[in-house]
Amino acid sequence: MLEAELKASLGDLAAEELADRAAALGFLPVEQVRERDIYFNGTERDFRRTDEALRLRSVRRLPDGPWESLITYKGPKLDRVSNARTEYETGVSDGGTAQKLLEALGYRPLAEVNKVRRTYRLDQVTLCLDQVQGLGGFLELELLVPGEEQREAAVERLLALLEELGIPRGQLSRRSYLELLAEKQKEQGMP
Image (cartoon, rainbow, N blue to C red; front, side, top):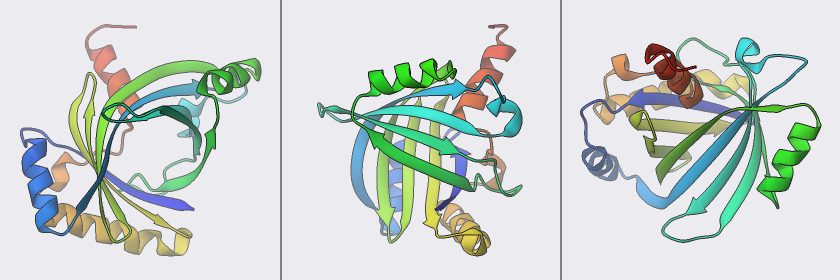
């Protein structure tokens, strides 16, 4: 599957106001979760240079659901507008064991991203309101398509929804939360 995705900073817009706008368009709430993402880097190739990602995600449905874990590979971005990329994801029964397995294979933890995510859905479109520790509020719009042939139409649909939600294109970001956090740490003189 291919994931067409747009990400935008909420800036000064309150998440509640955006949730109201989404509801007015017909988006329905799905869930609220806490996510802890550990990103890994390879020894044979540097995923930061190849624009790939290997992530171990732990998810807890709020307020007090059990933790579940997923492992995800994301390929390089496919265009200059969106975060569209090939993605493979599967559940793992034990996140701690999965982390040890990855480390035993030579993958090293690079960084951790923590967030609370509220998810909404309209047809096949997923809207996420993220509160990312150290970064603030973000909106993600996602649409899974079978292949490259549908990518451009999916991105156009997401851009139209972004406009309907009143989010300026200038607030779009193609950088991942991992990249944004690394950039912020660099600006603050942190290693």
